[in-house]
Image (tube, one colour):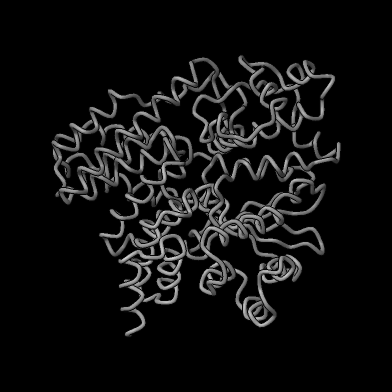
Length: 480
């Protein structure tokens, strides 16, 4: 558990650590009488629950005139973490409207937290909340931006900026893309003005006529990881390019689809530049020395080169080098403290043409998607998953890639929860995708969640009244 005083670590900084660390778990905010729990999955806000009845989904929908009294009572009586799933099951409005209402409800609860000037926060690393219980925001960064814009307290703004002497620079490997953030023209002009490392204080002095807006932009860019603290002692991770993808495809062909253990090792080796030591070891930031030592031993045994074919030797060497680095950094208390501090600072390096990099990533994502379609058609689902995971990392708004990823994941019963999440992500980007609705409905039906499956098929018919598959599936459910 990470316990923070909001007076010391403002809410924007707490959210920035979760977003940039792609953390999964729950964040509890206490500022009497306020008590809210925010659920996160890989750095994406998934749900908010509150102890206050006026924050409930039932109260929100009743005030909007969406729920009649009896339905509101039904929704109010369920566990708060079940509210979104129950609202979907009620099927009162179509899927697109439900998604919009849920996003508005989440935004209404989330935005005011950025203005808190005192209180306590505690983060617990835990398993992600189930996909069917989540609210899928189209853009967590956009909601974060709304929250920072809403800060009017000068003290909160100052605290959120942190040490003004720190040097900041554009982050080349940010998870968000500046072009996709809904900035105003004035805000974008400020964000674009940072082209080389300089102190926060020096940068803000350029905008004396609109210092408040400039402060908010800096806070937002640092929270989203688009600006970061410069540390010249660390090397930046190299950006992937088309030649990397070609080598990966050749390697996948050499390994073959039957050796899934080797494929997983290669997939992990490609993720190394984007994960920290804790993520590599699959332990929480608060892990004890014993937990870290045990995980290191297990990982070294899992990726022992002698137990793999020679074709993956390079990937295994990269993994084992990182394991050695993790051991050196985390097994010694002083070095671990220094490493944790570097993680909190999110060091960056300027330089490079960011637009070219994003275009290259988009191109790689599209090529991965096309190749994954070919692999899935031949039954090589794991190979397709490897490519699709990189595709949605480079292009998180690629709805078709999310849908295909879910279709491949559901082939393995152990991955059906992941498949449900992928289908939901596809629907959050394209609520009118009948293919994704059918796929999600079929998955729910396989899992015995008949009412949820029925809701998906009914939503299809609201979009396409004569859809044969939806009609036949609904008929089959009614016969049961």
